[in-house]
Amino acid sequence: MTIRHRIGVLLAEPRTVSSLAHELRLTRPEVEDHVRHLIRSARATGRRVAVEPAKCRSCGYLFNEDKITKPGKCPDCRGTRLYEPLIRIDPAEDRDDA
Image (cartoon, rainbow, N blue to C red):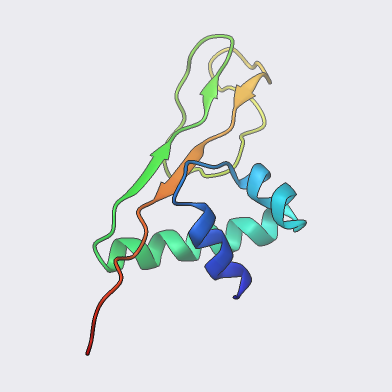
């Protein structure tokens, strides 16, 4: 099973890029590249992609859903206590081609 396929299987449940990187013993940038590819592929095939955006713990500011990694600072309050975005991709349906 390839790394990308393993990440896709894990994303059947909401996960952060950091948690995936930790679990798979990869770097966050490596995982981020795979996740971006999986999101594009899933959307192209009509699968549902859910991204719970990053959120500031201090003021509640919600970041854009396009950002899948933890931001550095909140643009409103300049706080650094942020929740990382959660990503979930509906699994591909198994097909019987027989």
